[in-house]
Image (tube, rainbow, N blue to C red; front, side):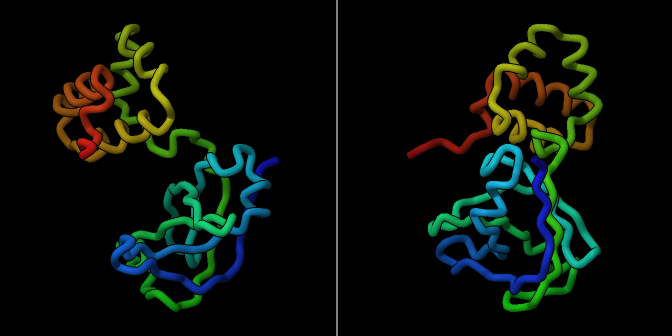
Length: 160
């Protein structure tokens, strides 16, 4: 079953020591309707104005939340405590990130790289694609894609 959810909710904000993120709560019953339950990637539409891809985070009481960036809050001119209209649907793209054309072509042309990419978790794939999507120069996209697919932990912060 594909889950969809819409309604109005007051935007909350985590305390600064926990990141200060803006967020909306999704109850456990709603999340259970999603095809992949808590692993579902989502598309969130706010106030009929903006849409963005997101994932679920545990709230700590059995429910979940989605993060709304400060940039998205500014785009809809809202603050913590404001009422917001939202629509949430399952993202048809399980990676939750666009695959740049350069990476698609690279994977079509390099069977070994394609196999390595295919073995990565969706989270690692998503992380790599997000990093590549930030690069404007095509040659740099290709070299960074090769580097990250061959060494997927390069882009991760070092654990202390």
